[in-house]
Image (cartoon, rainbow, N blue to C red):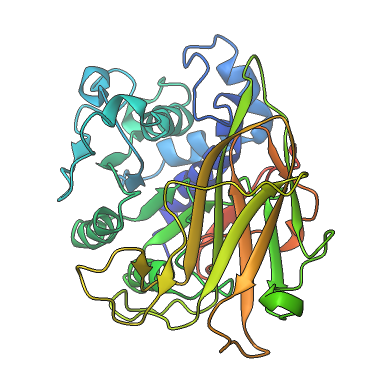
Length: 367
């Protein structure tokens, strides 16, 4: 994909933004003050000043950038202040769930504000403002699909996406999430993705079944150890534990008949129930069936007290081949795996070969 020469400078700035945002945004998506007096001093060593100067002397050609985020609450208050007055907010087909809006991360808005600061030399060069397009609630698949289609219609130059999906891919750049991303790439859009923070909470393995139909894992009694060390003043860790296996199709209408079950226990072998329960995988489940999924994934969400826990996986369908792989992913502050594969912890769409993926070097959490 080729951008016009006089857009390359701002493209480089846009890429740098993904690294730079870690200075201001913590792991929970909460931003530090966006009016820091030393903003220019921090950004200067990155060499952006040259790009500002070169772009100002060239013929202006505004870069169109789409930001895909969870929420942009109160973005309208910032119009003409910290984000361009002409910023376009796109209303998605599916709204936030009832009562959910206030709990959503404002990371999307912070991304927009930081991006503008970088592209305009801390708001000093308004003529360098991009044309921003904001797409909210893209954690919902239908909205994610819509956002990509709309970005293509708007002929944006760049899509910025600072999230990864814990299922929907096959650990190889394929699956229905990357199938959508490929449409943007094929349209000539530059897709920039954050690497994600799963360097300490990803485990990959081939699916080898041992005694009792359990899948072979590296920990005691075929387990993966999971540690909870609550951060700050919290007494618990919230864990989202996702098991997936490489049978996602490019089409969301096509399911799987391969079935694994995920079990979480403590060191006393007490098994924890979860609010989702075990799922039975079927290629074409009927709409009225409960406890059934056509997708190759199992999810446990639970609050854990400080301690060591163990994930186990059971082969329920007995139709896996030597080519099949599983992936276990944990998400939550204070959570880490005893056994992990940081070198292969990119989730989709950061694992897409056509995407520019940017990670952090100052934290072991980064994928």
